[in-house]
Amino acid sequence: MRANDAGALEQIYAADFIGITAAGRRLTRDAMVANVRGRGAQTTRFAAEELEARLVDGLALVAGRIIGRDADGIVSDGRFLHVYRRHNGGWQIIAAQATPIAP
Image (tube, rainbow, N blue to C red; front, side, top):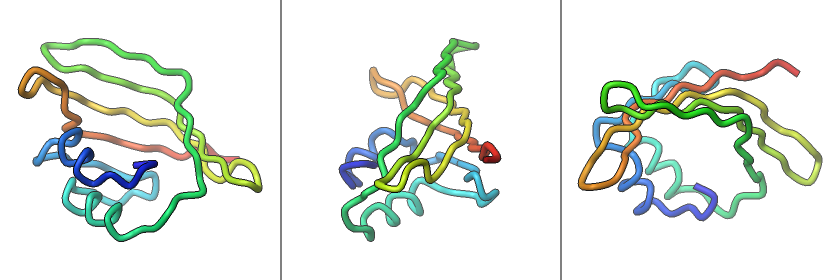
């Protein structure tokens, strides 16, 4: 996402991906990729922290905290949960949920 690489995102996110944004909106892979294609250079940088991963019945669950910063400081802070499945020898994200952390 940082590099606005829509092609890479199409490989990382499954075609049937479903996500829920921190604002509560439903998000498909195609909508996310279209958004990345339409935006310019990004000034916000994101760092994942407090990562926790586990395998459950052939799926990988990854939870963590993601903090977005720009020149003015922290602009977003939230927790996330991603669900991955095996695909063509690698992993693809099939579901994601984001929850904002109140300032």
